[in-house]
Length: 353
Image (cartoon, rainbow, N blue to C red; front, side, top):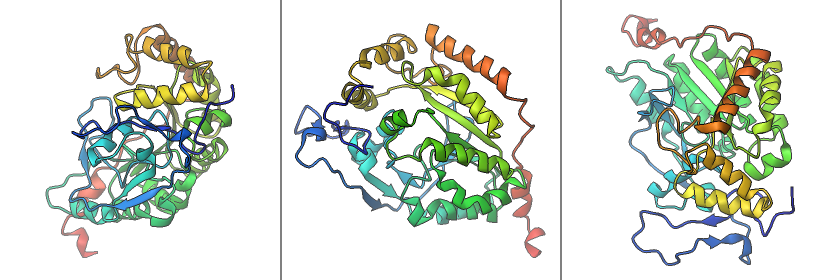
């Protein structure tokens, strides 16, 4: 890997593209903070007060009917993150502001409880972190996610979690209770096994060693755990597929999934700026390989294809995963969420006990 051009260490995005919803744009070119005198961008936590917390999922590509996010924006700073584009809806840029202006929903557990105990609510798995990571660093202080899990357990309601942060092990006590009743599944996102690459791609996430230990610990404690190699970025981490699946299987993961990177909206601008600064010798090769997976574009909006890609490179990746799973993974144990427990838990008879 060549030495990066002017680069803000500890951050993913290096620029702030203009918010597409703003009528007034004072600078047509994104501000390049890497060449500013003050490149140390502090993180600001902003409390917001939503009236609802559950979002209905309408995408057929997502295996959940509802999701919730206790934080908007994410300090992890993953350069490829599709959630960056959602920060525009809050009035911020998808670039550095996405990872430095974090919106905090301290009332998330209260809103969730009101929903779960409503007489018309029927149990359905809820995905935590459908947009931004529920275990990003500030969670260590605020414990919003922990209170959310306590609420799911209180009402015996199913939940799934995806995270890049080993902080999830703090809540092992609650996860074990949920798992004992088939109420939880966890996916640990591991994009690469190369720590140097991880520092550039995902600057404020847990290290690879910490994440591997997280997978092992969760599995050892009976938590249904899978690894998500998401996203695969052709030209950066696609050579790691067999090793990733074998490593995950050896640590006790029951499944390994993947997505292919898609650079929608401002993420394309942010990613291209980043890769030309960090890996200028590989930038064109990587960008062209991503285009090869999306019919000549950097992203696809086509359901069923936007996350798995199309074309020769996408097919090679798919075949590698098929072979890797066949070689290293046993048939995953049967699992289905216990939906009946929540519905019966709300019945008047059980409330007497």
